[in-house]
Image (cartoon, rainbow, N blue to C red):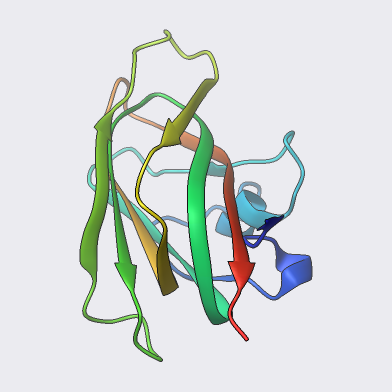
Length: 138
């Protein structure tokens, strides 16, 4: 298994509902735990991670702040369309401290993953990193 959701492995953010040049969505997959993407204060907020080819996914871990309810969906299409539910979870309120959560799921394959922050514990939420353990399809 390798970390497949990194810019250096060809992953990219193909959509985000919020953009701040100081905290761009690409920070989620830059491999740096000190950078983050910030939402704009309204919910829901979402971002899509697209892979250069289909990947096998074994586990998804996320480091974030002020996220209350998160939904993860997958698409196996060439373009990021026709998403199917994969996992949904309510995260613990840590009063603005870093939340580190794992989203357990059966092994699956996907070309795109959509992360929907349905609600937050504050007006703004931040995603520091999404770590996806998996392998590249050959």
